[in-house]
Each structure stands twice: as structure tokens, then as C-alpha cells.
Image (cartoon, rainbow, N blue to C red):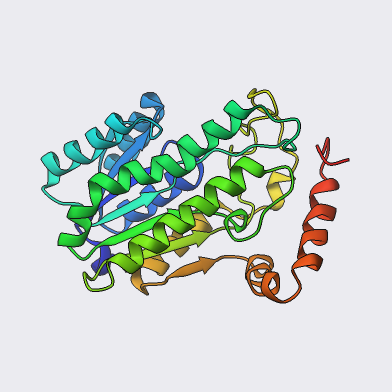
Length: 272
């Protein structure tokens, strides 16, 4: 694995915590040159220094992926530093928890700005370099991008949009050697649920899940590298996700009811 990724230039968005941070550290540990991107400059600086102190190579570029100009700057500064991009990990993401009748429209717009448009912006400017190097374009998604989840309208919509976008990029570049992968972890122990938006756009604050029982970011990160090495197309990391993708075509109503039941059992569930 170390030989496979040594000296590769890897951009990771949403790298200041959780899955993004774990992915950045995993690539750095395998000899890659890592570019950390997120809004928190202090967190990025701390992570980059830790990677460097462990013998890795990392730089950070403060980036709000919902702003096109900042995504363009991220790519330009990376190319200015390394003269190429081998892998782009579109990981930056935001969640929500509210039913559609209750949620304010600006909340859905915010989800699309970060989860969908952030992927579009970064991909738009990185794509020529990825194609030139026959690199990998990655979208960190969710089962919510394969099947709609109640109480998560904006999240599911943004992930479905991401999937359609990345699948189209894959097909358009069949003859160019570009690798495109969508990876869907299960519930992972990160701050995404604490920062999930409620109906009025305020942060949820308290996770409705028992975080100690969830998948670790490090586990997800290792699978990202494995998926790239094996040129995977879609990688769902849980049996629940794989069965959902299968059964939604065979018994979709049963899947709908199963997710409604599961989501309605959450503490303070928006589902009645």
C-alpha cells in the first residue's frame, strides 16, 4: 500500500475532523503528499503539524467548499506547490434532521451548497489534472444517496445529486483512465450529527446515536485507500447499506417502512 500511494498528491476536503482527518492521516502514513482543506484554519494547522512531526508531508489551505472561488484557489495553490493532483477526496459534508414540512428552505440550500456544490466546484477545477495523471475522484457519501431517509430530505437530496454527478463524470471519462468511486460508510463516530442542522438551521448539538457503537473514522479511511487501490466503483461499508441497495429494487416498500421505523426510534425524532 505504501508503494502504491507514495508521493501522490492528495486533496482532502472536510479534513479538520472525523472521516476527512482520518483519511488525510492515512494517506500521509502511506507516503502521500496531503493537502488539507476545511474552514477551521487552527484545526488544519494542528493536524498538518502532527503529520509533519510523524515524518509525513502535509500542507493546509483554508477552504469553504460552498464558495466556488475558494475551491478554485484550493486547486490552484495545490498545483502551484506540487504541479499535479493525483487524488481528490470530496469529503466535506453537512447533515440535517427535520421533516420537510417543518424545515426552512435555506437549510436545504445550505446542504446542497456544501454536499453537492462543494463536490462540483472542487471537481470542476481539479478534473484536468486528475485526467492528465489518470487519477482518482472520490465522493464520500452515505446510504442516504442510495435510498431516501425520512427526516433527512436535504441530506438525501444532496447525496443523490452527488451520485448522479459523479456517475456522469465517470461515464464521460471512460476512455481517459479516470477512476471515480463513491464510498458510503455506515454511521460513523464523528461530529457530523452534533453539527447537523435542525428545522430552523441551528445545530442539533446532541447526537441521537450512541457514538461508541459506531464505525470509526480510521476504519473508513483504510477502506478509502483500499477502494482506490482496487479501482472500486461503489463501496458500501455495511451490510445494511448493501442490502438496501439490493432490496430497494425488489421490495422498496419494505425498505421504506424499515427506515421509517428505525428513524422514528431515535431520541427526539422529528417523525411522529
